[in-house]
Image 1: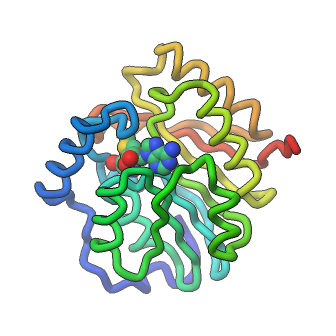
Image 2: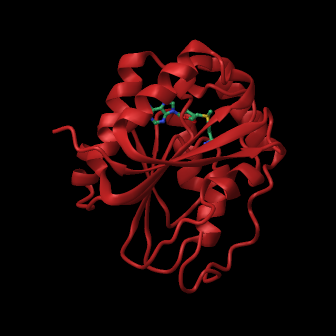
Length: 215
Ligand SMILES: C[S@@+](CC[C@H](N)C(=O)[O-])C[C@H]1O[C@@H](n2cnc3c(N)ncnc32)[C@H](O)[C@@H]1O
């Protein structure tokens, strides 16, 4: 991510997952495997790749779907230039509560990404410049995938960017293949994907821009 005043935040590098966060994540996975979708939080390296070469400026809005225990949130907190607004949307009540506690000053909504346009209206926020998704799309039924992608299209600026990831091992999984086809239908541009080996499991970042306006 680039932009003026990149290092404004004086927070310590809070990106290393404390064992407590990781264990908490695992416990949420055990409680709700389909919704949490991964047994271990993402790595710092994946977080870095998710925002690689995204340019933000004061007044822009960043929306994060499914921040979980906050690995991408930590990177965003360190890198967002002054004046950038952030909104995290987390479906799991306990994870949401912990995010509010762990990242004071950042805004988190307890709800579902499929409601993003309504959530932005509720907070009187405009369209997002960047949507970063940590959602387990491959575990989701096709109709939910479609509703979230439609909500993302509506919520993004015309020249906004949508970043998501898939696990390499699930690349040929029918649900992942379906998701990749569907997401390609919702955006005019798909930029080259980046593979991140230092993640458990290894992942591929997908970057899309220029949302197709369907309504
Ligand atoms: C695979 S975990 C990723 C967590 C974190 N971003 C990471 O990379 O470690 C998926 C997260 O998405 C959340 N989630 C699942 N469905 C959601 C939805 N419809 N809206 C918002 N969050 C959702 C889960 O509760 C979980 O925290």
